[in-house]
Length: 310
View 1 (cartoon, rainbow, N blue to C red):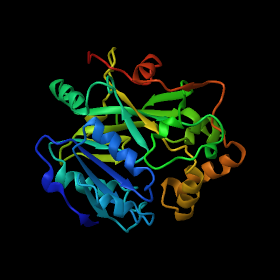
View 2: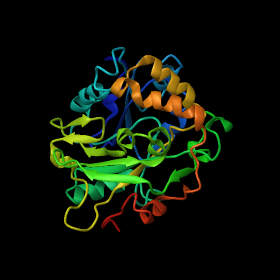
View 3: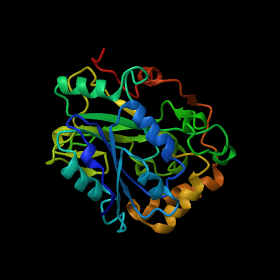
View 4: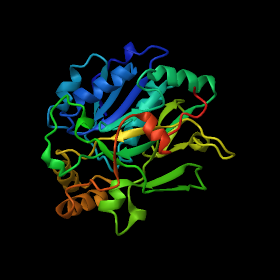
């Protein structure tokens, strides 16, 4: 990695940090940064993996962004996690740290009225070091390319719908985390092999220590105790959702690009499934789709929990 602009000197002892790896996400960046600034993120540490769409130039101009360029293999870097881990060890020790992609938007209990710092303060007071969030795939009603996404637009003005059920949950006995699959990707793109569908369980928010590391994207952490983000003996720990704005009109071109690069898991099998599935199923909406309202709706559906945070 090479630093393009390093503003980490502005990080204070109580700063909440966000880390992300990206490539060619220029159209998404204005809303992504605004959303997390409004939640209370103080500084962004971003790794650009060879963008050529103006992402790098745009990020350089943002006063709360530190930017690195990595020209090496995304696959060989554990899908970007080695780059993220290096930054976490150097800059994130002792900070609440959020790791998300540019199409992932965290919602948590009371997020409309309480900033992210209220959540992290409560987690810290409660002795909780990690906070889980289920990845919730959002999609439009109708073909994905019917409504063009504009730079700076809230993507959920278009991708308003989600699967309210159709999820499987199992426990990973070795690492202690829950393994969640389902939603529209399992229903449409992996309907013949649902066990190969992408994992939806994530642990994006952690009070970071330099001895920690993500073992598999943000699905699992080391040490393994950080994966115990649920209650075994009754009750529910607080959790959130990551609203996933992947399925916009930009998706088909992105899938083609990533398939050509071949830098994703299992020889980009996921993107191959997207390309093939889009030919016959350009519309993810179905009669069981539910329109998103707010976090309370997700709690009622059992997709997230406020636990004992009142």
